[in-house]
View 1 (tube, rainbow, N blue to C red):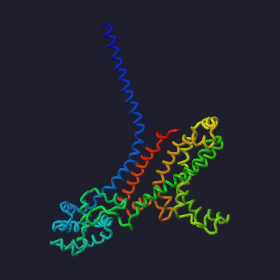
View 2: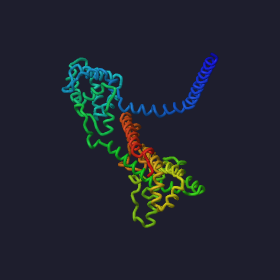
View 3: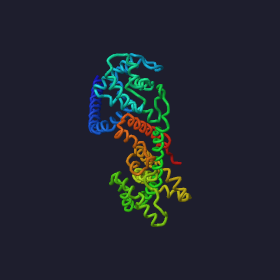
View 4: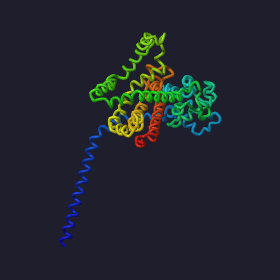
Length: 416
């Protein structure tokens, strides 16, 4: 009996200790979460929410649905074969009259101009004249006011406007659009600019990444093998550009590479060239300026990995009969691949979003996707298309990162 009572008491004490331990663990986790909460809220407000809003704007546009509700509702039953019936035209006349009175024609015209250039002015003229109509038949009257209303592509656009969600911006971002009957067709070659812009962005990013790797790897190796006193001085020179803004560094390249700049004057003074070379406002200047900005981002991860490689590995390889190059290539270089992967990926992803540097030192054919996003956001106020371009760039970046990680990720790097 006494033994049973003692075991029961011991069991109860263990339960109390276990409960106290669990409560202590919960308090510890709550304290840790409270410390992280301000940073989490900051990231949500300044990073996650804007990106989510951008992705939403790429597929959402309720301009026509909100400003022409009668027309969009009446078109729900339209089969798209012939022109709509009298009921739809009557709804259109009422919406045009209301929009003229409420002065909302500008927003409607701007939305229609995106898909049908020039339709905005005709819409405004139709609204002004439709406000004087007192009775039907509205179909003949509106067609007489403007032939715009006997075009099927106009009615197809208004029918698509009956949904708050649209694929127009995403289609336009990859050089597709809606045809007269609502089918998806390729954008005319004169207006098909975005696929070329994405390919150009990808090509420039790859070129800059390769240049920074070729320049950064030897410097990183030198930093990792020099004595601390010399390597610290050289490291200061590597990180010195971080103390200067990107704008200043980019403008400096304009001064260096311009027609009568320092580089051309030096080359002519050395009689290497007889007349100034075109070094600015082209692809060459874009890659050079971007590579100079991104060089530390490629170099520093490689250097950080090289610092962890014991010099004894090379000495062991040499003692076993390997030559200098063979020991470096088969023993040292494979151990640097994690740093190379991290540095190249960081530079490549950063280059995809460049806008300022190509705009200042590049030519018209060197502008990247960031230029078009800024143009549609700040100048043309076409936030839907800007959001779609940004969304596609974001998704492409994530896909490229996923493929890169699967092919050459750190966990797949093996030293043979």
